[in-house]
Structure formats: C-alpha cells, structure tokens
Amino acid sequence: RIQRRGPLQLEEILRIGSQIARGLAAAHAQGVVHRDIKPANILLENSVERVCLTDFGLAKQLQGAHDLRSEGQIMGTPGYMPPEQASGHQSAVGPHSDVYALGATLYHLVTGRPPFYADAPLATLRQTICDDPVAPRKLNPDVPRDLETICLKCVEKPPERRFATAALLAEEL
Image (cartoon, rainbow, N blue to C red):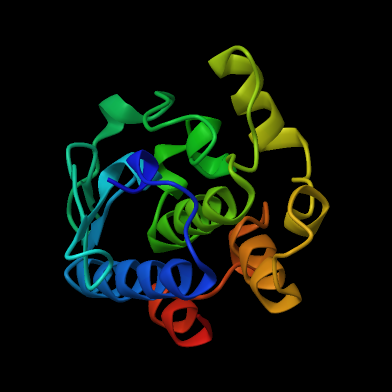
C-alpha cells in the first residue's frame, strides 16, 4: 500500500497517478464509479511498476441503478471524497467524483496529507464542502508548479472545473 511506504519520488507519483487514472477511465467506460479512492486503496507491485486500485466495496453502477436508499448518506473516506459525496448527494456522484478523489490522493502524495483534514470526520467534511485547499507548494515547496496545478484542478469544488475524464487526467500526468 502506498501509505506504508516512505516519501515517494516525483516520477513514482506520476506513474502511480497515471496508472490509476487509466484504470479509472476503463472502469468509467464500463459504467462503474469507485467512490473511495485513497492511498490505502492503492497497492504497489514490484516497487511501482504495477499499480492496483483495490476495495470496490462502495463502487456504484452508473446506468440503471437508482438506489434512492443511499441518497443523503455519506459514504467514503473524509479527506478524499468530493464535495458532492461529502454532502450526501449520491445522485450527483459520477466519474468526476473519482477524478476529485484521485487528485486528493495525489495531493496527499506530494504534501504528506489530504487536502482537508480535521480532528473530527464531520469537521473534515465541512472543510471539503466549504473551504479551499492550501496550495501544495505552501506545504512542500519542492512540488513542481505543473503538478500543483493538476492537483488543484482535480479538487475543484464544481465538477465541471475538474478534468472532464480520468483519461484526460492520465494524459496530463
């Protein structure tokens, strides 16, 4: 798992991010949204040659499955989930939500923490919904400006301001 390793090199972060983004693009093409992307759900094999996204326990099928029981419920990991998910609007969760969560994971990999974190999960959710993240370069001046821009674009509050697809994110990385 990523979180059990020490600090990662920039090349490793980019390789991990692009592999996960390509995997998400394939899942999204099949109508599946993961809904719980975070460092603990990313496994590395042979160093970072092969990256695996795990734990599809909260995954959602996009077409034909209108589960009204989940509307209003908050599912996922505070600190990595997008505002639409943190506020319980499950019907608004889609591929753009996974782009946000992957961006939050990349943010963590370059800064050592998720974009939002508080002592209590509800406080973290409030930050996710209401606050802007600290620029990664303020937490780690060694983060390249382009990578900071990618991270911040992924964690934009409005989904339409994020990368339109995981495939576009993979290309950018």
